[in-house]
Structure formats: structure tokens, C-alpha cells
Image (tube, one colour):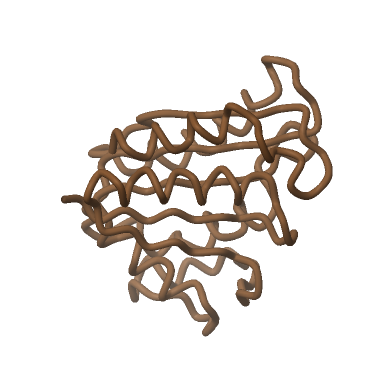
Length: 178
């Protein structure tokens, strides 16, 4: 049994990327894993100001929802990020959270496998490339970890457009494999 953290970074109700994340969660639970689902919707996440105090103290100077999320990520065996793609990049709130988790950099961490689930209005094969590259930049800072899998579903624009899409089943199966 692994401790799995799934982070849904969309702030929109009925988000297509969150629906993928929920299927991943169900698959991971079906495989017997302990799964924690985190949504950034309703969370207070301030922008990093680059003071680097976290590198000296191990904690950010801001008191918001990030320290609790960061603690869960540090203690997970596996992390799955879910994001809508805007202008061929991860959501701003995902990038903001990644930046704020800079305090993790000098700490020990358990996670080894990192997954990415992404959705977009655009359906071309190249659409998720920059999102994958951005997340890989974060993963590269944690050399014991790796990008273990990605899943992209394009052609979904409005909330819940993904309903009935075969990618939901693929997200479930991916979750079962962790």
C-alpha cells in the first residue's frame, strides 16, 4: 500500500481536469492505496516573493494553506498533479503552488513517482508539452523522483465536457497502476 496524494489545481466547479483526478483517485483506492485528494479550490495560496527565507528556516514566511499541502507531499509515496492547460502551460495556481513549495527543496521527501493529468480546449498532440516540461523542472529538483506517467485529454472546454470520455477510464487505470 502506498500513500498517494492527488492535487487538483483547477479552481472551476465541474472542472474536466478534476474529473480526471477523481478517476485516478478511484483507481488508486481500488488498488488498495491510501489516497488523499487535495483541491486548490478555496485554498489560500500567496505568491512567492523570492526572499529565500525558506531555504534557511525550512518554512515559508507566509501563513496560508501551503505548509499543510507541502507536508502531505513530503510524506507521500506518489504525487499526482491535475491541471487545466491555459496557453499551452500548467494553470497559474499550480505554478504558484510549486513555487511556494520551495521550502521542500532542502528537506528529505518520500515521493518517487509523479504523475500528470491535464486537459485543454485544444486537442493537438503538442499541447501538453510545455506543461510536462514545467512539471519536469520541478521533478528534476528531487533526484530520487521521476515522471512516471502523463495523461492528456484535449477537446474539452466547458465544465464536465469530459463526461463519457474514454480518458476517464484511462485515468482510473493509471491510478490502479500506482
